Image (cartoon, rainbow, N blue to C red; front, top):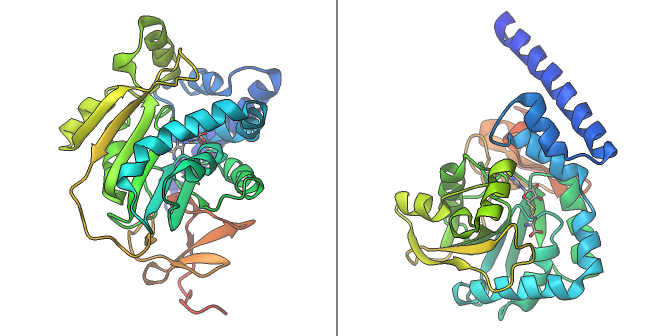
Length: 313
Ligand SMILES: C[S@@+](CC[C@H](N)C(=O)[O-])C[C@H]1O[C@@H](n2cnc3c(N)ncnc32)[C@H](O)[C@@H]1O
């Protein structure tokens, strides 16, 4: 590493130290940690690292609210399952992007007409995935959870039949195009975006979405990317009217099914093998750790380990 990049690295570490300690303190005071980050860093769009810290701090809150309002949770999940059903064949595969604590994924899986053979979910926050693993097991639902960034999904092209979101693109305002392109890459049959729809919202909701840096123009962005948008509407059941949930449904041309979702290295895009205690991109000499049973598959988690082999030792 040369001097310039060393200095850059140190100043990034200093920024990050201030950010994480500042956000934790804001959260402990009962303030909005994301708002703190926006003020402290002076950004309009929400940065990935600030989004990660803000959501990780709140881990446990979705499980608590699903427990407090099981009817609401069930209604939400049934509504999503109804949208997904036509695209999921027997032995199909399903992925929730930004699954949080799996309170939606567990319920959707239960309400589907056909149980997917491969159900996957990932979130940028480890603490949320850890809560999700507990929630899935309490609800006798089965899904593989891992940590990943929706902008670098560690799966091969056309790997999963249905890729869906439930308000996870939401905080990534300004990066709509990269997000939709990546979801379309991984999906085989359909991308189901359940997100707040700025263009269909009233002026109060729009003002709130602007303040929070939420996504906009999802339909227009998808169409600009050449997507076939076959559904666009607000949902019947909207839990938070000031954050109006809508559907942008993207159908893909039918492709031959892969037998199962296939991992790929999020950095090099080379094949990635699940070796149990680590994931390895042998051709790249990179490994990704598994933390308390949860694979850590963000680019930032890659560890140079040139002597890694595909054999379990
Ligand atoms: C509003 S919550 C919704 C959680 C879940 N989908 C549900 O229905 O309960 C948004 C989630 O998206 C995740 N998220 C946001 N940006 C992400 C990114 N770039 N990559 C992966 N997850 C992300 C957050 O960590 C958070 O758990």
